[in-house]
Length: 125
Image (tube, rainbow, N blue to C red):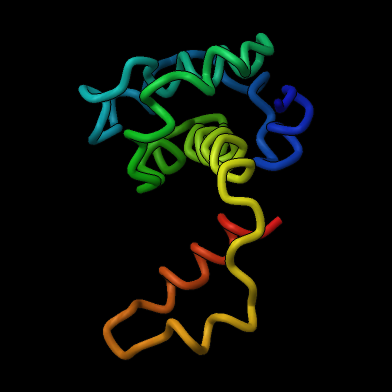
C-alpha cells in the first residue's frame, strides 16, 4: 500500500519536529473517540508504522478541524498526516470516480462549495 515517504509527501509534514508535548491531543475535540491520539499518531508516522495507522479508528474519527495544528508550538500538523492516511485508504477503494466535468451536474444551491472542492481533492488523484 503506502509507505512513509508517500505519506510525508502528501501531507507536507515533518514529524521529526514533534516534541511529543501532547498539546495537540489535549486540544482535540474527538480525542476520546480515537484509539491513537494525535501526538502518538505523529510519532508512529515518524517510525514508519503506516500499516498500523491504516487500520486504526483515528483516521475516521479526526474532524479535520485543525485545532491540533493551531495548538502545536512546533508547527507540526497532525491533521494533515491523518488526512494523508485517510486518502491513502480511500483512493484505492474508489479510484478516480469524481471528474471536474461532473461538478456542474451535482452542484445545487444547498451544497457548500467547500464540500465540492473537498470531494474533488479526496476522490481524484
